[in-house]
Image 1 (cartoon, helix red, strand yellow):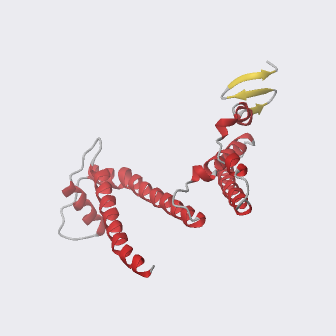
Image 2 (cartoon, rainbow, N blue to C red):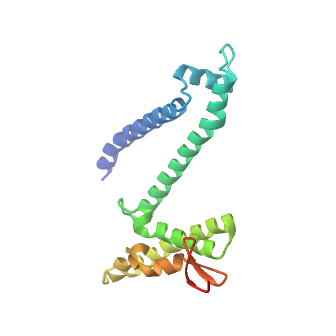
Image 3 (spheres, rainbow, N blue to C red):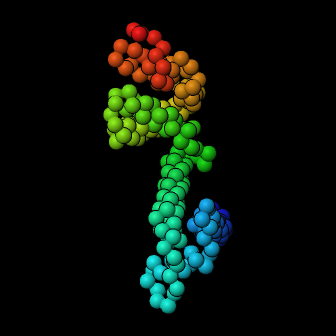
Length: 196
C-alpha cells in the first residue's frame, strides 16, 4: 500500500504541473484574444507597469483599460469559479467515496432548482432565491446521504426513485413551475386556466 502511494506521488505532481501550465496558457489566451487583440509583449508590459516595475514602457490607455477593466475581472472570475467547482467536485467524491459522483447524480442540481423555484414562487427577491437554491441543494444531498446510509444491503428502490429527474414527472413539474398570479395560473407568462 505504501509503495503504491509513493509511486502515485510523482504522477500527481506531474498532473499538477501540467494543469498549472494549461491554466496559465488559457489565462494568457483569454487576455490576448478578443475583438481588440493584445500581444503577449503588451500584456507583459501592462503587468509589469501594474506591479510598479521601473524602466518598462507603459501601454496605451485603451489597452490598459481592456486588460484591467474588461478582461481582467472576467478571467479572474472564471478562474475562481472553476476552482470552486473543482473543489466542490473533489469534496463530493471524498465525502461519498466515489470518483463518479457529481451534483446531478446526487440530486443537488435538482434540489437547488426546486429551491430556486420556491423562492421565485414566494417572490423573495434575488438574495432570497439564491438562499432557497442553496438550501434546496443542501437538503437534497442530505436526503441522499441519509437514504444511502440507511439503505445498505436493502432494496435499491429508494436510490432508483432519487435518481429520476424532475422532467420525468411531466405535469407535476409544470404545476410546480407555474405561479399563481392574482386570479390566474401563469405558466411561462401565459394564462393556462382561471378567470380571464
